[in-house]
Structures are given as structure tokens and as C-alpha cells.
Length: 115
Image (tube, rainbow, N blue to C red):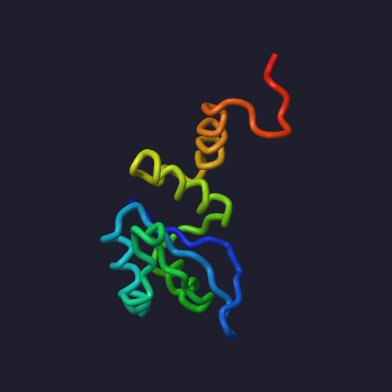
């Protein structure tokens, strides 16, 4: 079980934000409470995939508290995997899982069929 913070850098007013996701909502909320992020900032299903947008100062606190750093791309792939399978899966496998998932639907636009 793990909590992850990504390398997204999106402006929100004067702050620079990133995503914080976790294997379970319990872990996600526990980390948010530990680093001082209010529960009201939770981006909750069904409108969003479960995550917090956090400022870089909170990201540093999360990392110090044990969160693992991942890329923004990994966040997207892992979130898609959770939609399909119910689990995030390991970050190192995120892109391979995503490509295999897409390949299951056949050739993508602009892609030549496999020989």
C-alpha cells in the first residue's frame, strides 16, 4: 500500500499544484491529514478519480512522510488502471499496462496494423 505524488506543475493562483493519489482512500485521507490538507479538498468520485490537488509545499511534506514520487504520466496510467481493474498497480508497470490495455482495442488512429 502506498501514497504517490506526481510531478505535475499546474498554477492555481500563486500556488503550483500537483496530484496526490493512493492505493486506498483511507491511505489518501490519512496522508492528507498528516500533512495538513483539509478533507474538503478531496476530489471525490463520481465526479473525479479519487485524489487531492496539493501545493508543492504539501508535496514536500508528503514525501517526507513517505509518499513516493511518480510522473504525471504514471498518475494518468495508474488512474486508468484503477477505473478498469479497481487497483492502481505499481508505477513501474503503469505505462506497459496502459499500452496493453489500448492494444486490446485494436490499432489506434494513425497506427499501421501489426504484421
